[in-house]
Length: 247
Image 1 (tube, rainbow, N blue to C red):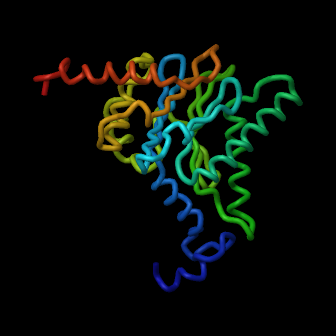
Image 2: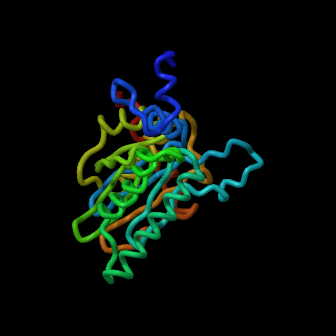
């Protein structure tokens, strides 16, 4: 860090002369060091895929949770500081429940994401607190269709057809730019998503260390169980034999 930046580095409410909030940028760095998290749309739905590899062989993989239910038709995946993510998930659930009580209907995906991002933005504008060091991929369906949003520690939100966050984002986005297509089938989307995750972590996929959540039109958001994930991975294992000699 340059000596002139030190004064702007210590306060979240102070802009640097070139218009930067360093604490927000540091929060983004925390996300970049998080687990690889993928979201992609397919025809009639959207899927979330997360790598939750255990850092120790003594850790129970099932004790770590990276995909969360927010409402009946909305779920999210997180990357970054786990404790920060838990607070944001609780806030999102609270907003969804308040909306249902007040209006007698499920909250729309975009409205929920905007509420969460408004909450995150408050922690970039007032002193005495730090930004959330986590990003969320929010997936869901509503009357307006299928949605996939990425939230940033700054409180910004962006809608995507396919995206990734966390340590493997570069590899994931590179593959999606080349191979993602609109209106993919569920199986094709799973094949591409698992391929992207494998490229990001540069290791063989372990069903115990993968979480997958799916939101489909007219169906509640659900997480695939371990047997379903194993079945998807078995299909992937057959892939090299099918394409051998095509390069």
